[in-house]
Image (cartoon, rainbow, N blue to C red):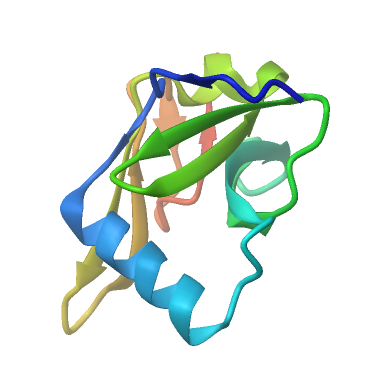
Length: 116
């Protein structure tokens, strides 16, 4: 794993940063775990987003946005490049949202996409 912190290929909004910090504090996430953002196969559109705390691996790049350390598997970077992660507190919707310029199609829930 590289210890160099590079320019992050995605954006976390102020709302997402606030929520991540609150979750880290409330869940007493260990300091050696960073916010993992990535993709996995599955979901109604082909790929689903990964968002959670994890220990970095050799395959990860480490980034930092306003004291939030992120890890992204190098092979996932092309899928999340330019993406904006936000957090909504609405009456009908509450949770993280993903605005991905690489997605050519998304599902109704917004957590699954395709790039074809």
